[in-house]
Length: 90
Image (tube, rainbow, N blue to C red; front, side, top):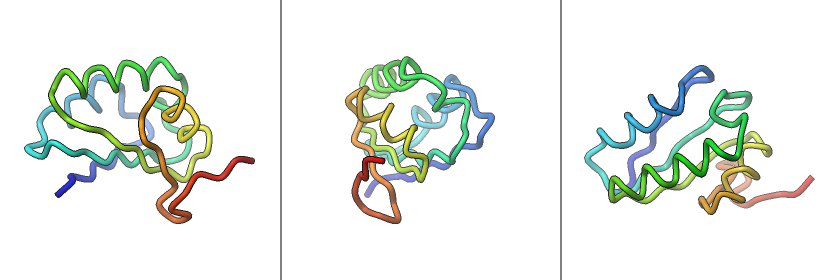
C-alpha cells in the first residue's frame, strides 16, 4: 500500500525529503498543492527523485497544479491530477 504524503505551500525540499525518508512504506504518493515552493523549479523535482531513489523508494506526484505536474513529469516522476486521473495539456 502506498503512503500519501501531503505537503504545505512552504515546505522546503529538505523537509519533503525528510518526510519521505521517514515513511515506512516504499511507495510514496506526494500531494503537492497549487503554488508551493517545491514546484517553483524543475531542479527541485530532479533532486527529489534522486533522494527518493537513494532511499530505495518509488515516488508519484498528485497535484491540481498543472505546472507542478509538468515539472514532475519532465523530471521523470509519474504525475497525475487526482480529480481528472490523467494529465491534461493546456
